[in-house]
Length: 343
Ligand code: CP
Ligand code: NVA
Image (cartoon, rainbow, N blue to C red):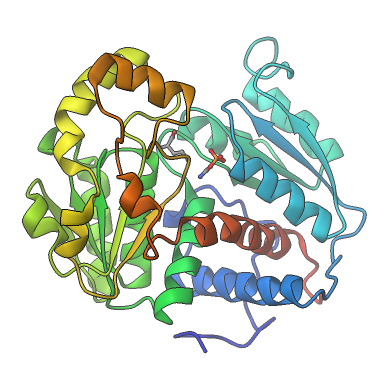
């Protein structure tokens, strides 16, 4: 059904691999994870139990808050028959009384896998370097790789293919989601456009790397600060919050100034292809139903930020499919990296 589908349970072996960033994975490996995720989704929908990892234990280390990623890891693990320990941003010794290195060396004596959400990519890499069990990146300042699998899965469900589609990211072009989308698109053959002010374009080195990868996969990377050109002829428009977790509150003012004209609204949608869709990793500031949304509106008179409520609530918005797919794709990552070879 899906482009490039490979035989299930075929030759791919990802056992014991960390999942730290998509740059570490080949297009075939990503394809395999997506196929697994589609398969797990079908099983779940049809009530087919899949407790393939019964008795295994995983630890979820969160130094930043989360709804989707935490719940996706927990439900995925329970569906696979596993046990989960959640460590919240304040209740472990990590970083304060115990180094990352020692934390990794302790946790891997007890757990079969470790998820980390937090600050720099270096931390998750250091955890992985000192752990004998797989480490999964649940978001760092630089990358958000599990989000990418859910995004690709959602795109594929809608368009029945990935290769050749045009995706534009609008907003803070140097955040974790924009960086990761650029990598994901270049690996999987989608033409990626970053439409944001020049000051917020992704890191040059990463752009160069992604351009090289995109050449191998027959697609392109474009950076533009022109909304009309950037959104023309696109299949998918994607946006994210203008200020990410861990950034100081005083950047709101300058971000709003810079990003106001990069809001995803009806005008943007009208400039895209007719069958286009809207994606957002969530959470999103599309109305005044959040405390931060209200506070920002009081200060800067902006009731909708990165996307208008009209677009968010429209039929072309696939954000809740995307959120659900976090669980199926994370399940695929856990399973692929922990299953025994002959399972
Ligand atoms: N998209 C995403 O990672 O959501 P959470 O921050 O709720 O985990
Ligand atoms: N860029 C956002 C993504 C949230 C899922 C952040 O890091 O806060």
